Every structure is written in C-alpha cells, then in structure tokens.
Length: 382
Image (cartoon, rainbow, N blue to C red):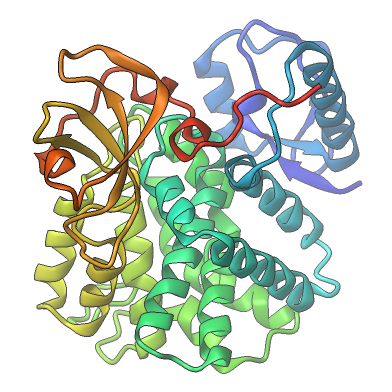
C-alpha cells in the first residue's frame, strides 16, 4: 500500500470522507464515509500523522473530476487554463516520484514543458504570477515552485547564463521543496502563525530534499548545491548550515524563492505589491545583479498591475513594451467608475491613454477572467 499524507484541503468538516484515513503503520483511524466534525479533530489527525491510500485518493479524485465535468461548463483550453492546471500536474509528478524511478528525467521533462509554456507568451506567465486572487492555497507549494522556476528562467536568461546552468537552476526550483510541498499548502491556509513543529520541518527540508535527490540519481552538482543552500545567507543567518560562502546559483534560487513568496497571498497576510517586494529585494541585495535582473524583468508596470489612466479610467497591464513606462493595457473601469464588460485595449504610449499612476485594486478584480483581458474566449465552444 502506497500512503499519501492526508490532503487536509479535501476534508470537508461534517461531510463523509471519500477514503479511509490511516496512520503511518497503515492502521485504520477513520473509515471511508465517517465524518470529521471539527477543525480541532482535523488538526489532531494532522499532528498525529494521517495518511490515505494512493489508489483510494486517485479513485476519489477521478470521481470528483468526472462529476465536475458533468455539472460544470468546460473552460476553453488556452494559456491561462494550462497555467492553472500546472500545480495539479506537478502534484501528480511528485506523487509519481515517491517511487523515484526515472526521477531525473521526469523533473527535467516538466522543466522543458515549463520553458516551452513561458516562451509561448512570457507576459501571460508574469500576469499569472502577479494576479493570484483565485489561487487555491491547497496547491500553494506546487504553484510557488512553478512560479519560482519561471522567475529563475527569466533571471538566468537576463544574466546570460549558459543553458545547462539555466536548466540546473530550474530543476532546483521545482525540487527544492519536495519534502514540504503539502505542508506549505497547509501553512498558507492556516490562520495562526507557524507552529514549532512546522518550523522544524521547514528548517530540515533543504537537507532532506538534497538527500532525496541524491538517492533519486541526481548527480548535477549545481542542481544539488542550489537545493541544499537555497535558504543560506552570506551573513551566516540562513539554514540549515549557517554558511557565509554561498554558491551563486543558490543565491539566485533564494532571490527568486523569496520574491515570489512575498508577492503571493496567504490567509494570514496579503501579497506585497511588486513595487514593495522589489524595493525590499533591492535594499537587501544592495542593488546587485540579481535584484536588478528581477526588477528589469517585471518592469515599472508588470503584467497584472492595476493602473489609473490620465482619462480617469482604470486598466490592467497586459503586455510590457520597449518603453517600460508605456505598457499595453486593458481597460476594466471607465472614467465614471463603472465596470467595463468588454475588452478595450490601449497603448499607453499615446497621450490620451497615458498612465497617471498605480491604482488600488478594484473590489471585483477576482471576478475578471484573464482571458477577457487578453482577448481569449471565456466560454468553451460547443
């Protein structure tokens, strides 16, 4: 029997369980159909160490997907739906890696697919990272690894790193948190500060990931070093070893990791703005090449930023331009404050559509389909 940690986000209080719940020794704790009545009971299960059988979880997920397909209208396949599906694809990849056969090839294949997706439209990749209002926090660990890998790709390319090194960095981003991916989702959803047991798991994970990768057959020294050292800091305040001499590739991974974490929302805190996260990064890095690369990649007005136009309209940035102050935008609120239900694309290089400054997030931001911003269909054809 292959056991998976209890997927807490799939447990609905007061609703019959879709699978049996067991402990680490496969002893039955709760039978399929029983009910978890309270958050206290759920937390106790998680603290004790609760698991479900992989095959049972897979069957329950398949049933849920099939029921959803019958009851819900299909979303059209476009770059946004592909991006939204990636965290679950990574989850399936990680589950398959529990038997680490061909682990190196599987991770490298996932990275190649990610590079291809970024290259199809890098502005959509950035938009997806900036606008996370509808993100499922259960998948936070997987989403964060993917977004960190994307930023690693963009940083490394801007710094003209050779392709093998770019690949090593991206593979490290995808695999750096394998021991704590589920834990990251739990912590993103919890409304209390990190528990001591969670802190201990977090501090152990670089070493555990490094050890797992070695056993899985990874021999690339840069990949392994980046994973082991991605929480080290040159002042010695990092972990797990408190190093002061940190490999450049590990510093690059930490910069991307920390920046993406800052602009991602949690239950306990809102996401930092791109501008504030970039300011903090620049101050910490003292304007070094890595922080400069991040700032140049996102630009003054990155895709997904909400801006006010000189016309009084509010718009979402959709594409960067050669002039970083003049991106392409999609208008979402007219000058009178009314929502616009159809797409209006503006070139802010034109005086009548120029950007006056950053705007506060409109209350309906989570309900605006990104497909509409970019001119894709929002309803699948029959």
